[in-house]
Length: 154
Length: 101
Image (cartoon, rainbow over the protein chains, first blue to last red):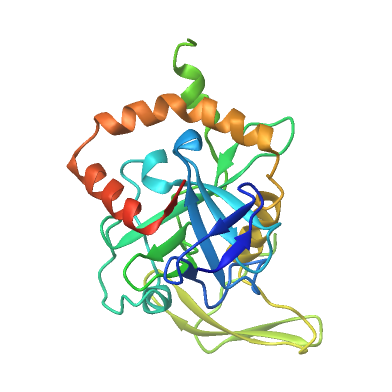
């Protein structure tokens, strides 16, 4: 089985069919066309999106529906085709489609998640894109902290 | 901000070299044609914003940040698992497709 060096998990062994192909990369990382999605029990619900090309490139994400249970995709026809979903209706997040919001956290400020441009993958054909939801009601920097601060401290 | 009204088929210039033509006006979108020097990058604003956000996100790498996030997101997890059947399905499909350690 192939192995890769990762940013957070040292060396990982993975099966050939587990990486997701991003034929166009994602904006800013156009050369990164394959990612491994890694979930760990002790960092749940975070999902790590590790580039196979460069061990230093690993995004941290959260399932979009775990941030907003009513989260809806609004893919353009081109994005649908890129995901192997050439029909007109919008795909539901679920068995076949998984959506990840990338997290940004700059020192001194609260973490935010990008719900405007979600990573969307087709779990069956293992292809992914970063969808850019035009006229999106979702924010590029959706704050994660305030809701959690509302919960009582233990 | 300069505001002007144009119909389909009309155009305007920015400087001497950039021409923008309104090709088609739909109920919710307009189709534009842009003529500009090749060395000038033309990008949709959402893509530029996404690229900048991705670059910042890729620098969110401090293990302490992850520990902090996990701590902070903990309560949300508890809320999720109480939720519906669809979430169970989602869990299953994820289990099959995401590397687990």
